[in-house]
Image (cartoon, rainbow, N blue to C red):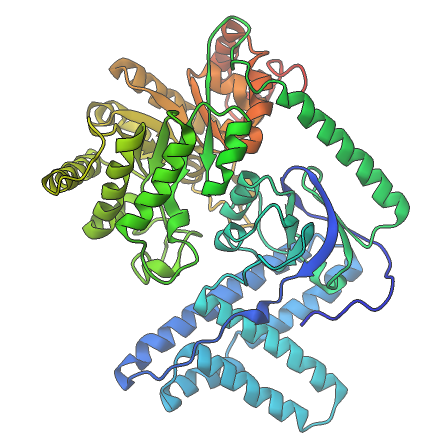
Length: 590
């Protein structure tokens, strides 16, 4: 439990990974892991094995979380690394064959209670035992045990830390870890920014932060030991710096930088109503990726020509049941009305990997969620899930232009099956005299695994459009888990193999005459705009906060030069050569 601030404390500077630009200055709210709700219920004797397995998975996950922190702590100065390392090693020891783990496992079988309740009971028993020793050292160790127990409960419940709606405006959140579902609860009118010990630039929490334009820094392993509720905090999402209790001089320095960034944004805002037109007259469509409906106003304010990627997962987040057809329809209808005739591309449910939610129960769990039953595979396995979503989309399509995008397609058969489901749902709705899109919306394919890019010609015969998802395409092409700190340095969208798959996709779409857009994080990086245009992409979709910066870059691009440089890039043997080949394309301000 965080302590209350009692006196002025000294300044501490930390270096993490800036994942969402901008500078935020405000009071800290330290997110307390122990705040997770602990459900308690009896279980049948036949359920003991499954409950023990669930507990073992939570322990394994906790061990991996702490190992990541250990990895990051090695970059700290020697003294701090030793101190943090000692604490983390102690936590890892508690997740081995310790009394805590053995005790919980035994309680599940003996007391016939769920794993969360068994954790809580075992922690209480250990704390009672330590208290009997009347020793300050052991009393302090109780807090360590409780922290490990709270982590286990959080892993078991998979609940977000807490709602953040009651925090004062301008609050900086400080946490050990924040999930995409946690981030979805943040209201930018109240939360000025956040910083966490875990996480990296390619994870979905970082993507959510950029979508909400929240200055954010991740990967600061020893932060929580130095911050209290109410401490002044500076979060610099550009440089990755975090300052706790800044001096007046430090605060003035960051204030000056913040005002410079704000001036730059005001200059960019003048581009809002100008076309995204290259120097030689090619018009580029710049659209917005939406994670949450509340981003719509930001996208329109930045001049988005449409929504190139609506991640529909938000409807399923932070709830214990599945959303009904009517619920989904009303959300989509509101967005369609808000876009006032501009097109919206709705991606069907894409869960798996780090995107797992309680509302889906155990549907998408597996030994390796990133490669398992996720995205279109999950939707086709559970037809009611897909058809409910398709019905809502078709109904909303009666009020404005919508497209349907299928995630993680790897075979033609998946597209055929999804189209058959759409036709089946449309027939059922028409029989009920329900208004739906007429004609039916275009059905597109997400190109985000290498197999899809390699069979793009075949997919182009069955799909109405392509959208290239470079985040997963890079991950799967290079066999890199982008959330694994140990190998994240290998995650590189400029790898020639990734660029060649993008080129294959664009060429296949051109041969068939269907549109192709690019909606991964590459699209939102202004430095990469000349490269992507040179590859033939004419529609880019990105976080709303990136639209104006990318438009500014597009308006400086010479397409003939971009095509020549891209030819050099595709012939390059490694990413460094690619970067060198495109460096000359980037002149002028970001």
